[in-house]
Amino acid sequence: MEGEEGERRRGVRLCCLCNQKRASLKRPKTLQHICRDCFYDVFEDEIHQVILQNHLFRPGERIAIGASGGKDSTVLAYVLSKLNRIHNYGLHLFLLSVDEGITGYRDDSLETVHRNQIQYGLPLHVVSYKDLYGWTMDDIVKLIGLKNNCTFCGVFRRQALDRGASLLKVDKIVTGHNADDIAETVLLNLLRGDIARLSRCTSITTGEDGPIPRCKPFKYTYEKEIVIYPSEFVYQMNLNHFVFFLHLFYGWIRSLTVSLRMLISRGSTTSPPNAFILQMHIVVLLASSSRIWKESGLALLCVKCRPRAILDIIKSGENFRISTTTKMPEQGTCERCGYISSQKWCKACVLLDGLNRGLPKLGIGRSRGSIGFKNGNESDGAKSIESKQSGTLDF
Ligand SMILES: Nc1ncnc2c1ncn2[C@@H]1O[C@H](COP(=O)(O)OP(=O)(O)OP(=O)(O)O)[C@@H](O)[C@H]1O
Image (cartoon, rainbow, N blue to C red; front, top):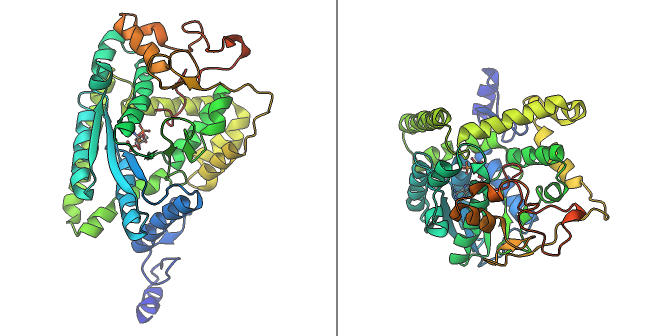
């Protein structure tokens, strides 16, 4: 108490949650000035509440964490194993990584996943495009060139994660998609008029009718907070802060050089520069639509002053109601591999067929005209559920 009085007298701002310790950061989600301990507590507790309120898991379930080696999935693996331990969820957790075969990018991030396997004591399973499809992304880029290769990467990754998950016999897959990813996807789907995706991109659990459901425990977690959180590792492990930040700095420099290298060689579009280009496209699209600009674009840009903008966009996405007369794609299974598909062949099989026949562009773009709708009603306006990527949620 004396300490608190003393801090006050010295004009030090106290944490607005515990009112005892010195506030050391401004929380990006709420702009509250809080101390480090309270930040870690609220960060973890909010995710715990999201898991409980949405009944994401049941005791005894086997859960695969989609581990890309990036910040989101690394923090997800750490937080989920901690919550599982302290709240006795009773989950069996696994790390599942997809190696797309992108030299200088995925091989680097897989090193992180291998480190996480040891640090968190979680079993790791890696599935590769080379083993599953006979092609690496590097091979595909060589064949198809600079444009459109993200279609291959996205479609194959989605299916590869499902295939890896079924090998592990898991009940669910969790991914590190965060609130910013979801808000971005809502806006993209809105701008593209993609009703089918708009209706499901805000769901915390998707694919319940597919092979393995996918959950997003970070649905309401802000990316900026995920970036702040890792210093918890330092704190918990009593590591030397200098060494940690040196390591972090080294990581940034390394990803910057990889990004620049890929930008110069204009390699695979899964690279960070393309994510940046995509975001730039959104800004341009927002700028060209005055209404959206007013209602959400401006809010997005002013997210620093009005952090709720991200949650509001997610809420608007959740509140969308689809008219009952809108025809939605009919889900079935691929005649070739048995994967979910609204067409005769799933998108991965169409793409793979094109690659193997030396006609890689065969399956790119809308599937109209290539392989007809299963039930023959192609002209009804319903589009393939796997026909194109839309936002960061489709991977
Ligand atoms: N190669 C992969 N292997 C396994 N899971 C993946 C892979 N790529 C993406 N994911 C999953 O999808 C989520 C979102 O992927 P995205 O490509 O948008 O990366 P991100 O937003 O930078 O996330 P991260 O920081 O975890 O890489 C990741 O958090 C991860 O759970």
